[in-house]
Length: 117
Image (cartoon, rainbow, N blue to C red; front, side):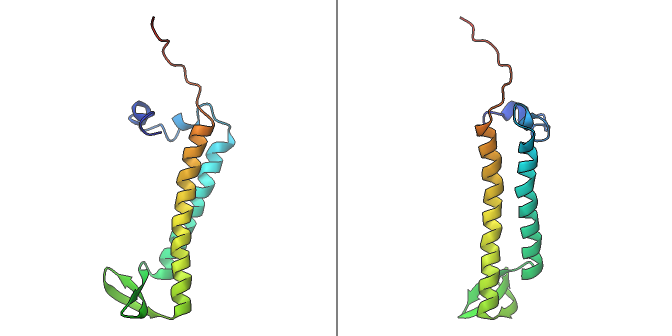
C-alpha cells in the first residue's frame, strides 16, 4: 500500500482524504473504531502496569522498567498484566490489518493515464 501510494503520501493528506476515495463511507469509521480500541487498551495497560512490563526475574513476578524493579507481583497479577500486554498487541494488529484489508478490498477508482501505443 505504501509503495503504490508513495506519490500521494508525499502530500501528507493521503490518510485524511486520499485513502477514502472510492471506498464506502463506513470504511473510515470502521478504521477509527479499532484505532480507538487500541488507544483505550494502551492507556489502560499503562495505568495498570505503571508504565512497566511484567517479567519473571530470579523466579519472582515483577514489574520491570528497563531492568529496575518497580513492584513485586503475585502470580495472578502477573498473569493478568501479561494477558493485558498480549491483548494490547492483538488490538494493534487488528487496527493495522483492518486498514490494509479495507484498502485492498475496496480499490480506489482513480483516473490513471492511458497507456500509449
